[in-house]
Amino acid sequence: MLFPILLILASFVVLFIGAELLVRGGASMALKLGLSPLVVGLTVVAYGTSMPELIVSLKAAMLGQPDIAIGNVVGSNIFNIAIILGLAAVVFPISTHLQVLKWDAPVLLGVTLLAPLTFLDGQVSRVEGSVFLVGAIFCTWWTIRMARRDEAAHVEMAADAPEIRKRGSLLMDIGLIVAGLGVLVLGSRLLVDNAVVVAKSFGVSEAVIGLTIIAAGTSMPELATSVVAAFRKQSDIALGNVLGSNLFNILFVLGASSTIHPIRTSAMNPLDLGIMIGLTVILVPMLATGRRLNRWEGLILVATYGGYLYLMWPKTA
Image (cartoon, rainbow, N blue to C red; front, top):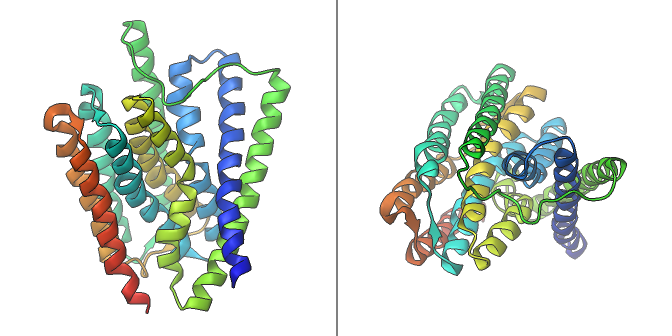
């Protein structure tokens, strides 16, 4: 049993490396093709750090493991707000720009509240998944449009990425992207296959494994990005990384996975959905109050995750 656990830990590192290769290659290529650093940061890099969630959920859906596919999405969104944003705020209080309160946070809240309605019939169908994908495309288009408008108006905004710059040749960029995708596929296989082995040996459901171990593992790029950004006092990166990732997880990860194969949602406990929705709901007033996320609010978020684990794990005993 020790060997599968070690492979799970190794898969976290592999997923992080894969996301890093993909982000660096994609960002450099986008700059060479004429996109600005801001637009690259808000799209290529922000989505690149969420690629582990996408690859893992796609892999699980294709293998007929819907509990892992949907648990990964819900669990990652819980982990992103409670642990990543919570720890980042504890390291350094996170300031909130008006644009976040006017657009990013309300859109994420709306999508988080509406998405569970698709679970009522016991599955996320291909049609519903396609609607999510259309929403992801629209949000991406709107993000680029707003970023270019702000650039034209000379509004200074921090791009959601550290050190975005051109690197080497275009062929090298393509090589990094291909290598990153290949490493992500390898990491996702290591994570999913061995997580299932561990779940079965300990009598833990695949849904719980997806909500915890896999969700935390696929969120490693976001964790590294946000915590480093907090230490550098770069609030825009820390906050934008979490909000963008959570929106991407619901619209693109869940959308793409259910479009390829309808995802059964019967194993999803109301507690899990309630925690995801509740954290998103309380995050909005936290950000609006004084337009910053304070250290004590970060501690509340982290403590909420601890309480969630306490309530969830005894069910598997």
